[in-house]
Length: 252
Image (cartoon, rainbow, N blue to C red; front, top):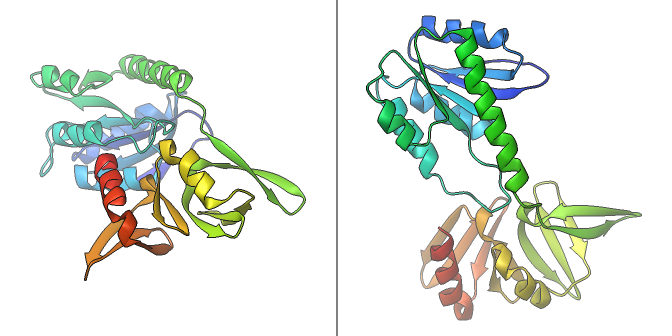
């Protein structure tokens, strides 16, 4: 796996088990002004690792590869649920193959385009233009993320609700736990539990709320229920177990 960094343009992942095909596609993308950062992967499993670490706009995907095929990888990408309504859409898939037969199945998987090898520069540019137009249209339709304003020293900080992992009662305040740090909000936890329920927060205890999209693991042992989010493991009170279980199952 490697990346060629450019300052602007679409972030592209090229997936092909043939080294010559990879180098040719990189050569075309290096000369294409619509392409920004370019990553490569020699198989579908390596591609999944790149997709977990990087924000990818477009996947240029070979179909016939050893192990997981390109069609199977595209199916996995299509079936991934959106974490929340405000989340960015997943990468767009453009199939690149020497075989025209799987074209029907490719479009059933909502592929943005289907390029036949050897790929011509003009044809690649047209496919990337379609991807750019689709990304811009999706961005216009996506609602603005919900934010909450909190005081930090002499400054007001706007925190996205989707970035809050869990909330801890702190007297008449609530402490918001995020990857960037913690913030105090002058609102009681009980009030937040009611207001933020529609945004995916569930009450796990009289002193805590959890954001469903950040739940990593749910453990049940000896009659206890534990919910793990990044940086914390929170116990669910017995009274709230049925409600928490129902909400977690609905959001899975």
